Structures are given as C-alpha cells and as structure tokens.
Image 1 (tube, rainbow, N blue to C red):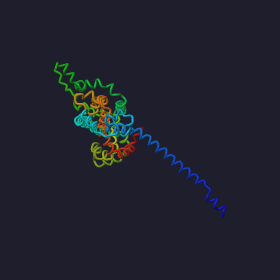
Image 2 (cartoon, rainbow, N blue to C red):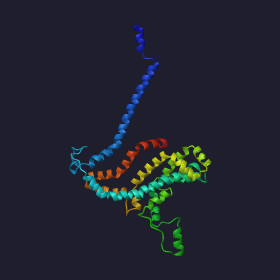
Image 3 (cartoon, one colour):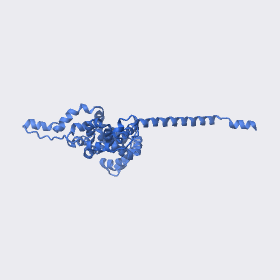
Image 4 (cartoon, one colour):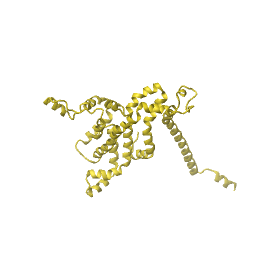
Length: 319
C-alpha cells in the first residue's frame, strides 16, 4: 500500500512534459505582458505628458513639485491655442483640401492596382517599377518643377508651345492656393503616398480568387462592373487600411501644403506657424495646440481601431 502511494506521487514522462509546457506558457505570457506594458508606456507617455501640461496653469509649469497632476485644472490653454490656430477655419481647410484629396486617392489607387493585379499589358513590370519609384524618390527632389508647373499649369508644355509660337499672352492657369494642387495628383494616382497604396491594393487583389471574376464574366459583366459589384464588396479590409493611412498622412502633410497653399493654409501648416510662438509664450498652450491637432485622428482611430487591427492582419502588412 505504501509503494502504491509513492508511485502515484511520482511524475511520469507525460506529466513532466505537461508541467514544462505549462511553465513555459506562463513565462512567455509574463514576458509578453511586460513587453506590451513597456511598449505602451513609450507610446502613451507623450500623450499623457501633453495632457498633463495642457490642463495646468502657468504657475505649475515651473513648479518642480508638480510632476503629473497639476494643483489646479484650467482650460485657458486650450482657449489660447484654439484662437491662435484659428481652429475652425484651418480645420475646415484641412477637411476640404486634404481629406477630399485622400478620398480621391483611395478610390483611384484601387482602380490602378486592380489593373496591375488582373490585366496583362505591354511594359507592365516597367510601369509598376515607375510606380514604386514614387515611393523611393523624396518629394524635395521634385518640389521646384512641381511648384513651377502649378504656378503656370501646363500639360506636356503644350500651352508654352502655343504661347511661344503664336506670341500669345500667357493663358496658363495659376493653381497655387487652390485644392487642385492636391486633387489633381490624387486623381492621376501620384498623390501623397499613392505608390504605397497601389502596392498594398495590388498585393491584396492578387490574393483574391479569380473564380469570383470568372463567374461575373459568365453572367455578362464587364471589367468595370465586375470591379464595382464583385471586387469592391470583397475588399472592405484593404479599403479600411488604406483609408486610415491616407486620412492620417494627408492630415499631417505640412511640407507640400506650405509650398502650395501659403495663402490658405490647413491645420498642419498653421501648427508649424504658431507652435514656436505658443511654446515661447506658454508651454502649456503649445501642448494644448498639439492635442487639438491630433484630436480628430485620435477620435477616428478610437472608433476604428479594432477593425483596423483586423484589417492589417488580413491584408498582411508587416514591418
């Protein structure tokens, strides 16, 4: 009887293996949680820092005893930043100038990528290589010819040819300080990060089963109708991914906006103009301005973050 009790308490090889697996699983989960906690701290520290400074009065800014929680909460910093940024006007400019461009870009890049993914045509690989070059070549290298072209908009130099040949007055339109400086590139698939969006779309469309389109062709649908009726409803995840990326990148775009729209700057450009002055006058007001700038994107991401993470996983974007 004593021997049987000892045998029941001894670990069999199977129980030892199970014990090791459970121990390893616990260790891995602990390490994972610590890693995520550290990563969250790095990401959220800046946000908490801005919030802490934005709601504190001036006296608390230089008080060494105040670290995170201010002695009093004030909204004066937000009021100052709101007025300095002319928030409603510049925010509206950002919406109609940049976000309309983002919407056009999302749709146009999808059509272009579908052509690359499903159709064969001459010099297809070369053209796609040129698309990838738009990702590699920095905008600063092209800004001077682009600026001059928008100052005297001319397609392939046709207008200049007629002006020089027939001694005509310069009839080329001036597009600076208009939405066309962003809408036109988006319409032709060369807008802000368009090359990257085409690449993402193409990889996704290549993974869709061709049987969907073949069934549509059998029913008499053409390529356009197939794209609208079959491909678009099946591509919600990639459209969400590209839409969020395009929206955020257009919202944050300040370099091109400053070059093309000095007379009617969007919010990102206005931030560059007033941020230094606000920080000199009041560090808290500068932090409030930063919060006002990122607030629309944070609110959008709060509502879409779960679907966005799922879409990133399904689209297969890594790195």
